[in-house]
Every structure is written in C-alpha cells, then in structure tokens.
Length: 173
Image (cartoon, rainbow, N blue to C red; front, side, top):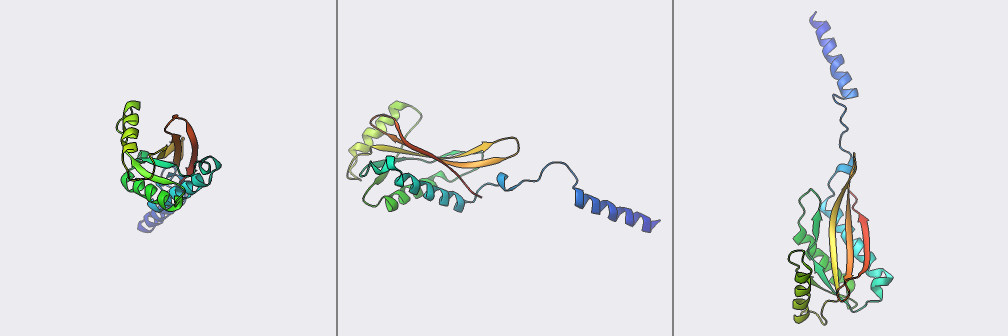
C-alpha cells in the first residue's frame, strides 16, 4: 500500500512538472523590465541617430534645452540620472557643433515654458540661448500579453513650437 502511494505521488509530481500546475503563461523576456544598461545604450544610440539626421545637421550651432526625462512606465526609473546622462552625451557627441543645457519646465502650462525659455536665454552658460527643446521619454506599451518599452525623443524649435525631429527606439532587454 505504501509503495503504491509513493508511486502515485511521484507520478503526480512528474506530471505537474511536465504540464505545469496552472494555465497562466510564465513571464517572457517581453515582460521583463529592461536593465539600466539597456536604457542607457538605447538612449546613447538614439541621440547619435538624432544628431546625424539631416533635420538636425542643418541646425549646427543650435543649443538644446534638455527637459527632464519623463517616465511613462509603471516602473521606477531614475530620471535625474538619465537626464544628466543625456546632457553629458549631447555635449560629448555634439562637440562644437551643438550645445546643451538643462531646461527646467514647471507644470504643463505654455506660460511656464515661455518663462523658462526667457530665463534660459538670460543665462550665459552657453554661447547662445537655447533654440531647441529636447524631450526624452521612456514609455511602456501594453497589449493583452506583452509589455514593451520604448524611448521617445522629440526636438521642438522654441521660436515656432514646431517639431523638428522625433524618433522612437525600442529598448532591448
């Protein structure tokens, strides 16, 4: 009797191991939150692509006002550190062709954006006042089964408010 019980127990454990105990799919790589290295690598690659684009190349000498990176995901992200990395990368990649400084935009009001632009124009940390806003966002896109993470970059001409360049870059895991 005891031997029969052990055989049944082993058979049950084996079948659970092979089939699984529930029908919920296990998380795949598409559900995984990207590593900070993956986010940094994607950001640097995206900034390089942006600076090489014809729309940005024709604006040589422009000053980017870098807005704080936005986190559009459900996960915690050190946006301060990422914003600093964006500034440093722009300064390194842009060399003497482009300049970058931090833009602090409070609230969502256009009046605040205009006020910040005027304040930035009055500071002397770069040779010229900012002519472009650089917006960087990390966003999460969700469908029924999968979450993907994307880096969105948008460059807006301050004088006109028109978008000069934009791009979306999938963040690999």
